[in-house]
Amino acid sequence: MIPNSPFAPAVAERRRLVAVGVVALLIALWMDLSPLHRFHDSDSLVPVLMSLQRWTPFYWEQNRFGSLLPLLAMPVRGPFHNLLTQVGLRLLAVVLSFFLLARTVVPRSYWPAVGATTLALYIAGKGLFAHCFLQMQPYPQAVALALGGVAVLGDSRKIWRIVGAALLLGLAFWVSPSIIFWLLSLLALRPHPRPLSRLPPPFPRERGGGEGLHRLLPFALILGAFAISLVATKYADWAATDLGAAKVSTWPHAWAALAVGAAKFLGVPLALAAAVLAGCVVAARRSARARFAAVVGLCLLAPAGAELLALGTSSWVHLNDLTIRFLCCGLLSAGMALPALAAVLLLEGRPRWQRIANVMTFAALVPAVFLRFGPPSPAAATATSARPRRPSWPPGAPTSSAAIGGSGRRRCAPTRSSGNGAAEARSGGSPRAAGRRATSGSRGAGPRRGWASSATMASPPRR
Image (cartoon, rainbow, N blue to C red; front, side):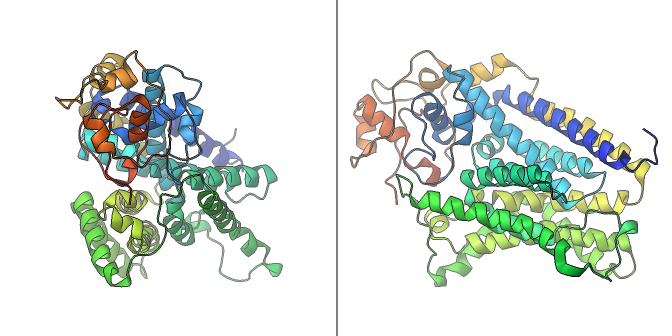
């Protein structure tokens, strides 16, 4: 194909998408075959029981967190292999969320460099427990599906693209409808996909408003998927989530606590990103590159703030001690702000540098993953998953390797119960009681370090 062909940009974009897909798949597989499995708890192991014993549309005894991955992994009947399959799919969603966000916010040929740089910094900067805890959350899955739907829709008006985008957005809001605040803010602020030199003049506009209506299509699909998810949540068998608002007097404290927790998690890069963004805003009048960088920085940081403000009013977030795990989407976009700003200021308008940056950042992922996870090894994954980290267990209770990584499997399915799960755990309990304890609301109790058997986990009373 000749370089001046009008189809050349589309072909180059397809090649970038294929390269990113292959890299994401390899990295997810590498991370899956690592000591990451040392830090599983019930949030990560119960979906395996759901896939093998009894699948329900939502997490057991909950009306949230759609069970998409347990459904996809259902053909894998071995407990340990089912665990590897689901963790691999979760990790793939985590990795893809970095690249899809970069493609949405930085619609230039160097978006793979932005995604790869942010991912490398995250892998190098966080420990194994943080990586294991993130993959067991539903938010990266929802982000990857939602941004994938936005990418499929693009600027096209083809029916198959609209149907595909609606399907992916529907799956995203089934998995986690709480991404609505972050996603709407992100799409409202995202930059124009064309290069700065090719931006259309502001006037004249098309008559009839057809272009404006087409730009509203993603928002219509998102709101429709969100409405359907709310209906499904309302009529679910279990109604364990309080979707109401907390007392107004507690909102300022919640906002402050969430902001402090997010700032501690992101650290110095967040402060640097804010400083660079301020400089770009000052220089925006004189430099088109600085103006575009300011738009990109605002598109990444403003949705994080919108999500924090919205979730800070939620009674459910208050009941769960204002943990920042609910801010996964905002932490992702805020963490990408500094790499995105640097990429725009250094690479915008320099095609040769853009290709070099894409290759070099992909190469940088290899040492980052190796230093954090070690060489990929099925033996390492098996050894760490079969070794419990808690020294004592209730009498007669199986270890986590027996429940998931070993041969013995208990028939555990969700049943309605009003008994004291902790007392049953201390006394050994029956298999049916163990199933009730495995399915209780650990998703609302925050992270637990170390191993916790999915068949013996005793959780606090649901609030």
